Image (cartoon, rainbow, N blue to C red; front, side, top):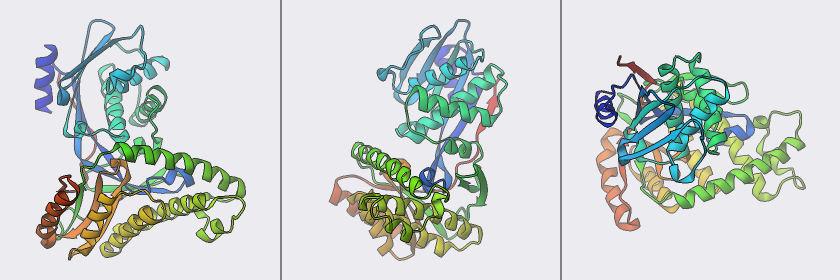
Length: 385
């Protein structure tokens, strides 16, 4: 926080009044749980972003993104979405949403910095939006609790910037901490924290970055989401009085005239993954780590063979991990846009797997790297004046 405070002072000749730091989330299992109102298992990333903010005397905003050394500005008289403004649209969206809800917002200077900002994905956009909302709430003493900040952030992201997201994701983000993962029930909008057991154990959880191009995956996932939306609307009509997450694969297979074969696969996978998210939470809670690893591998197999949403690079990394001694399981993280895979492995086998990553680079032309994963922690808000 001290570093961003100095950056803000240098850029705006103004001391930061507040600094807000937060991670974003990985959906470890249950990325598509919203479609069946099922379950999702979330864990905070171990990368963060920070927002420093201070007041201005006029009704305008000056924005600085340290990572890219980019500057943007806008005034409150004409807040419009502009494609060329990219990341600044996220902040404009928050201001526009607050003003539309009759909150009084003055001018401000804002600095963004953090490792998380080196990536581009809807989950990072959500983190930027929420951090900005909280920073504005503190700076202008708005009558908002964190849950209301989450709702406003969700509205700003989805309405102003037209970025697909989930209110559940924002609610999970404000409740995460450094020792737990969160199981969210998407039907009742309740959650349960489960202590994450791989922090100081012989079994380590890894995040492996495949460093592949994300654009093809973005297009593919958009197509899958459209198909899933249509398929579950049909399923809802076929079972109007049944909870979608409780429908069995056998029942889906029996819907010969209702769903196409592709739609059956989509519904079957999403419902099964939702159920696996709930089971994985129980396994973590009861310290059944071997079974938890097997659950991850079941998710990966479903993503590859049923949902058909993996790529050769991720499949290679998962297969080599499973062939490596001491690997408990592996699964792709959808929210990383096809770039990352979540692996459980005994610590004694890490050196051998690292050597296998060298072969990955020679085969695919991308350099893969791994980091030890543990939840990053809760939102931090620090006043400076």
